[in-house]
Length: 303
Image (cartoon, rainbow, N blue to C red; front, side):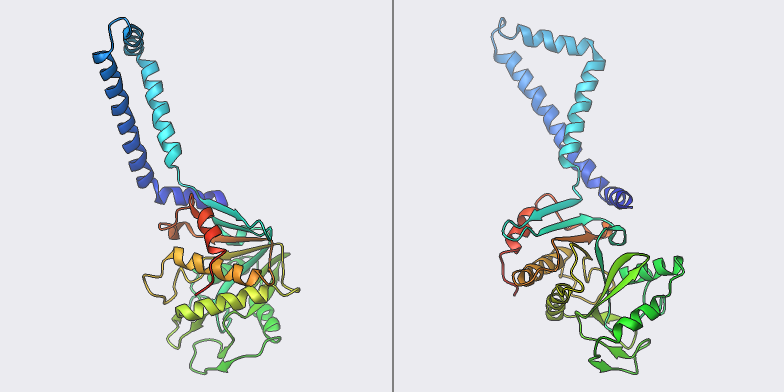
């Protein structure tokens, strides 16, 4: 499944790849022709003899010229081939952070599903199937698993913060950052209350709530009963969430990493954190430079 996501990523970025590759390819061809022409024009006849012979050989052997031009184009494509993964390892704690274009539900380890603060399980009317929350419930339906009793059993261990009878589904709200573990067919998942469900069925969260929620989530995931070697999370707040338009995917990832390391200084929730990025949400992410960015973010305090 990861390969299909990466293929989707490539399809969405083929125009940029083609433009950059052809641009560099043409500039290299023009530069090579210019250099050869200058050498033939200014070098003494006896010194340029070998160069004239080489040019004549390539001119008479079109297949070889075509092969060299193709290899030059291939080099340009390889240079600009989009990366879909960035890895950083903290030297002091041995914690690894991976940012990758991948399907979270197909990863090994604990898979964190961000949900509404009422922990609803009703598809379509409340939970859109296009969200990660909806994808998890759809997966359960295909496996003939009823998520409702699993969720209800875990919620009995948590105290609600309020009740709102005007909400379209469950009327009980829980603190943002609350996590509940769920095991489905031997795979470990964890729901975390991430957004506030509104009376009209929409969801919302402010930037300050976003930061507090992330801190609370990392703290909860560091508890002995929930701690795992590998934790997988999606880019929280990237789809169907009422956040400011200028709050980019990169900024959301930055805050996830900053809050993670802020908590990890006291108690780490995992040895490997994988942030799974949907192929439709990576237009403003440069994977080739993100390892350096993560190293910088790991040392910065959260605002």
